[in-house]
Picture 1: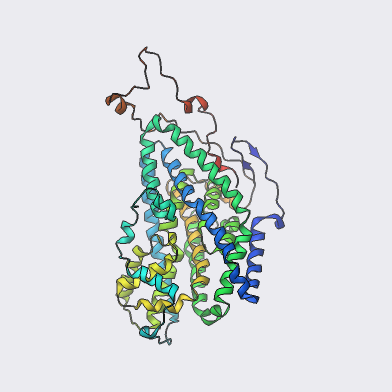
Picture 2: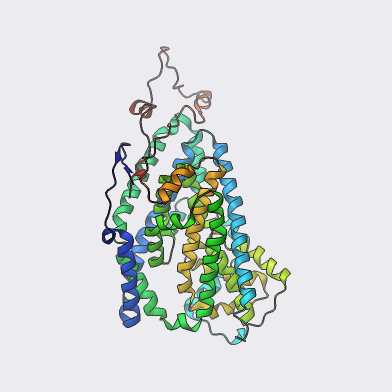
Length: 494
């Protein structure tokens, strides 16, 4: 496929041999990590710092990248109503998708009822120290706090804590304000686009260490939890994986078919990101790669910048399947009978508690505990029954979340009538396509102008000076012409 440089020139892509591609080395590192953790558990546990260091280095960039892409997308559009409608459509899609995923989990555990016969006594279940912290956090979490949590205490705190949901809120407000500034905000918008390019360049450096990070994370997981955890509760793990695969093929596959796209070719196109998720057990490191590839596939930059990061907090299909399936398994294992009405009530609570779970360490467990505590029918201590296998289910959760967000972005782009389905089809199939044509840049004159407001408050009117001569053009207007390519630097291949 041709790649695009920051100057807008097409550079023919060289065919990379399979043994030089990133996904091959990540997959090899995962297999080696499994062997090390299985054959030498103590050595595998000692590899934990390697995996955590890589994941932390990736998370370090997620907040700034999400902030900059959302701000750049909102601030560069001429009509803010389009951004608002896109956001509203995305939230509507997210809620419907979450409900479908939860229903899949409820149906699966009701059909197979794997918890029957366990007969666990919640009063005698011992809670480990690490699990107790998560249970305590979930029990002190009210359902409404998942809504009010979106407002941060400070503008810097979300970036320090890595809270994606709060970063999105700040970015949306900042982007709208920057859009309203008109010409005055032009230098800031230009700086945002340049900083985005810098962040993606840093990301390209860190990605070279992806195989090492995947090895460390997988060796630690297998060494600490052991293969015995897989065999002891293999039925529940298998049911979760089967349900997730069925959801991807049936629900997400049907949406892709409606768009006249093939979900399997899309998955193959995103293989590097899937290998990264499989190795690190989280979808966050794959977020920048997904955004870049969707934009290359013909989705508008502002749609990608708004829908993908928001979906990481609101569109967690994998977490939704896990919550519904795990909650009912615990109910069955502790002999807690739930009527259909109670199960639907459980689903309604999970629609709220599941939001933002991806941005918090142990978020899935905290959301599950908060759900059980809010309902009050199922003993929260019962989560210890699945605590040992949660690590082996996190990879699947992340993969489903990632796939769901990719499909959601394509669907929202179609809903906005901005999806180039033919280009997306060819890109996913691995065909060589023409480089993305530079869109006509949005002139800062087209964005909301506050010059009149500045004049009203006694400021100099930049449109006319005292001599009557036209005011000097802004630097941003002088450096670029309407025909110049103003695509941000992060459009280049990482």
